[in-house]
Structures are given as C-alpha cells and as structure tokens.
Image (tube, rainbow, N blue to C red; front, side):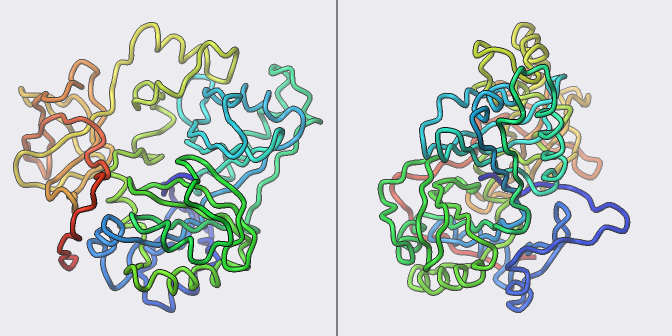
Length: 397
C-alpha cells in the first residue's frame, strides 16, 4: 500500500475525513488539506521526533485517505494484465506487486499496489487525490472492447469509506503489531499479505510501507479504526510507539528514495524516466501504453530521476531549478529537504539522462543562488542490518 499523494481541492469542495480524524484533533494534531482530505501533518512532538521514532522504534500513520478497490471475477487477471505494464500473472496468492496505471501515451496516471487475494480476486490500493479519477479510468477501460475481455466477468468495487488503513512502521513494528494480532506474523515476507484478526477485528495485514523501514499496513473496517489505533498505542507503549503525521512520512520516504505521485510521477513522466523500467514487461502481450513505452525502451529515455546531495548549506524543495556547471537550467527538483537521519540536504530531480551518473556535478537554484550539488545513488538511506542507537532529536523550527 503506497504513500501520501499531493492534490488540490476544487472550489466549493469539502475536505474529507478519515475515521481517525476526531482522534487526531482531540490529541493536538496539526491538520492540513492533503489530496482532498483533512490530515495530520504532525503532532506536538514535531516532525523530527516522529521521524526518528520510526527510524529507531515504531510509528503509527493514519493512511485512511488511500483508496481500496476490489477487482474480482473470472476475467480479473486477464483484464489487469491488459490494464497495467507489470506481469500480474506472476503474483502468488497473498503476494503484492507495485505497479502503475499508464495512459496510452506512456504517461503515469497513478502508482498503485496490487494484491492477489484469490485466484480471481485482487485488491488495488490507489492514491487519495487520484482515487475517484482512477476508478473512473478503470471503469472506462473495463468498457473498452479493445482488450477482448468480457466486462460481465469482472466486478470492480471501490470500498469508499467502508474500510480504512493504518500503517505500523519501524524496526519494532512486528513486536507491537503481533501483540494485538491473533495470527503469527513472523513469517510474513516483504510484499506479502494475509488475513488476520487485529484487536478482535478481521482485517488484512500487509508487510509493506513507505518509510524505508520494516513495516506493516493494516486494512480494517472503518468502524474499528479508533479501537485498533488505541490498541496499537497501548501495545507499543514500552517500545516508544508514536503517532506520526504526513510531515514525517514525507521525510522518511524521501530518504528512502520513494516516488510521490504529483512529484516524481506525473502524467508527463513515464516509468523509464522514473527509474521504474523493472516494472514493464513488454513481452507479456498488449497493455495500455505498451506502444509508447516500447518506443522509449528502443530510443532510450530523455530524462532520468536522480538523487542529489547538496555539498553546501541550503534547503532544496520541489520545483527548484537544477543547473549544469555553466549555470544553464537542465532540470527541476521533484522533492527535497533536510534529511534528519543523514544530517544533510537531499533532493530528487529529473535531469537529462546524460547527467544521471553518480558523481556528476550539478547545482540547485535556491532563492536565486546556485547551491553546489552532486548526483548520488538512490535510495539515500538503506535500513541497517544492525540497529544503531536512537539519534538525538531536536525540536522543529
């Protein structure tokens, strides 16, 4: 189940609320509009403290803004094979796959996760700001006769507000979640999911996340959200569990080099440019966007997503110009900011493919001044095999 997404609010539109909204407000969360939802960006603890809690212990995230869509029926597999560039047929029962919805021109409509829950049943997790548009796109694709699949053999159902998602992330996430689960989760592999009863409520537990740490995402009925959230806080008290907002989620995913729709992925960015060429299976047969992506594969990508590390003081943000050594603008940052874990400023950017090699000297223009930077491999941060002591946190500014 994937990460936070950007998205504006149309004029006159009311912000939606997750089932945990009241809990966040009652516990002092700072709420902000996000993808059409009123979401906690941080608690009184602050982004840095929440970030370090996830890297060293365990954090809880409300991800109830994400969309959950069931695709089921005898034609479900064949249709998903046609809909996405990945090979869905390779999924075993209980296995998950990161994938994309691509437009016919190869651009990215959304990034999604596909779970195979049965021979003919799949669960798709989509980004909040795109959820309604994604479902409309999928329904239009389902009615498209070009795929040669009988739509009558496929049920496409959005769970809407009936179900919600909670993420438990950090090196002690298994320890905490296991305390309220009736199923042994120790053997659950990465990008695998299984049904389990969580604090007395049947749900689905997936070993996925958006932080670069070991973690789990739990799908449960919305009516059980507050009870499960509070049970996790109680079960994790000795592990230093901390509720975390979207601010920490963003700094964590940036360090882990994970794409955010609307930033690293857009309708103008194809999966080759986003370093996701491993996802495309041109040999599996026809699928939406195949012809356009085959042309990119043959000609080579014009742009590439890279990691940039500032070698001087400065704070890069999304949308800042990237400059070559002559001062010419050659690209733009897609995300950026200080790395609480690495104690340096980092960014991701789209630049010409010829400038994507690690060690390439570039610069980021911040407030009208060029700040020296160097291309570095992604991800910026990898989970250590041996845990280090918890870093000292400092208050937000």
